[in-house]
Image 1 (cartoon, rainbow, N blue to C red):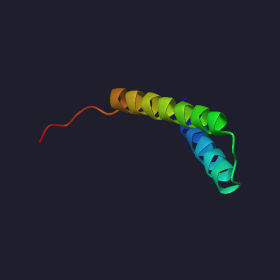
Image 2: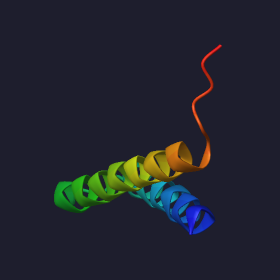
Image 3: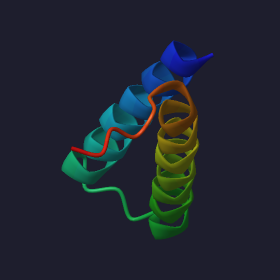
Image 4: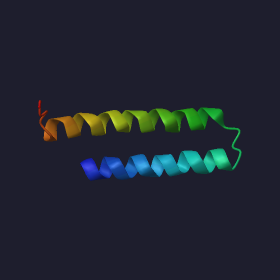
Length: 57
């Protein structure tokens, strides 16, 4: 599950970069992709936090 989210996050990053580099004028599409990417990042962080315990040194 975690690796799937990471893969989707990387794919979205590549899609956003490709659209930006192509000079896409569809700002709504770019905004949706960026929002989805941020949600994925948050989900990944939550899962990683549950898998990796905090170590207070």
